[in-house]
Image 1 (cartoon, rainbow, N blue to C red):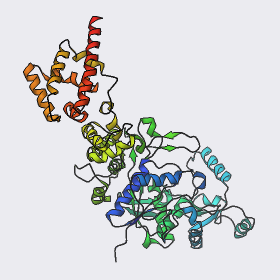
Image 2: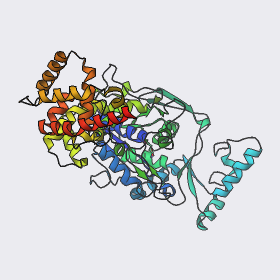
Image 3: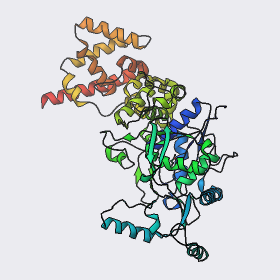
Image 4: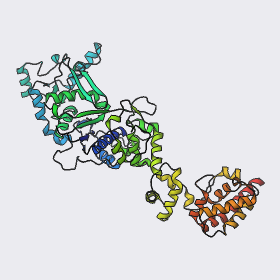
Length: 514
Ligand code: GLU
């Protein structure tokens, strides 16, 4: 038999912004598809109109775009397997419901939601808290199995709202193979008669999901662990609809856990624990509450994606820094773990820092240009990037030192107090006199002049270098001062020396006199 074409889908419900777990699911689907020359499909599962959130679908698409997980098929892209929003596929499901009713695997249920709530309350009082609509209780409910044919017909002609439920068999084992977990066996006694079609003519998630996976020729269902309990029902639906041959393979991804390992990382954890859980910032359309996003915090999409890839998967060696192309090459479901992956916010910063360092200076300068408020050349920004990139986690930090662009106003008090001594000005004056003679103002020449100077004076570099840094940058620490000097140029260096050395000396005198 010829190998089935790999077709995977990411199937979010537009019930709010996608959290990082959702993006990880999309990423694993994408990697798996691309690795196997397959298709990556986006399907919007919006059958539950009550949970629909304004702007959520747009958010999902923007988030995927930001992460550069391009879809082959999805809303707005015309292909033969569409439409890709379930609400636009409403007409497709009825046929499958009818087939299930006809074959005796589903039935009509007339119970109103009030009646169902009442039933649950009664069961709770009778110390049966987990009441379920199932093979035992269905006979005492209002449905086409418990009522006479006449009664059922009467309800139809009276237009009594009715849903369709799956008829779960008694005591049967449902077995399926999960690509990550191995064989999973669930007994139907532990499953209930789920509603598969609602009174409003909309399928529920379970039926729509199975029918669409079939119609869209999905080969692998790769989704979060929270859907594992639904999988046996899906397997039964394939069986009852005679679609077993078309059934996709299943892979349920491990949970992403809170940093302390205690429970699943939830949408509410993010800003509460001091890190974003959403790829992009999200403003709740109702409450207007704003939740932070990785993009707005300054993360590169490639480092966000690299970090997510490692939440549940590893390549089996010590390599951690990956481009998306390398992830595609190395990814496999076999290397996805079963147990929950602890999210580490510090590690996500580390990933960003590493990706930043791997970028070329010109790439970084390009990003800096967008935020830079000074009128400087691209070449100048490239040099700033070169000096700052080892010290930055986010690209906006490359612009954090104002001294590259203008004479500083504030200075580091502590360095001044510790380092400016009564003989400092004299040393500084002599050093700058030597420096003035340097013709090609390059960092190694400047460094040479400095080395010779301290040797001549028989002083350690600690006696002079911090004061020079103070004069030129106002700081106690920073990238190589010789390189900063080269970048600022001789004229600017001499100018700062002229202004700032007397200023610090005056401050010193004031302080020693008080
Ligand atoms: N609509 C489900 C969700 O919101 C999809 C589950 C699946 O992939 O089957 O996550």
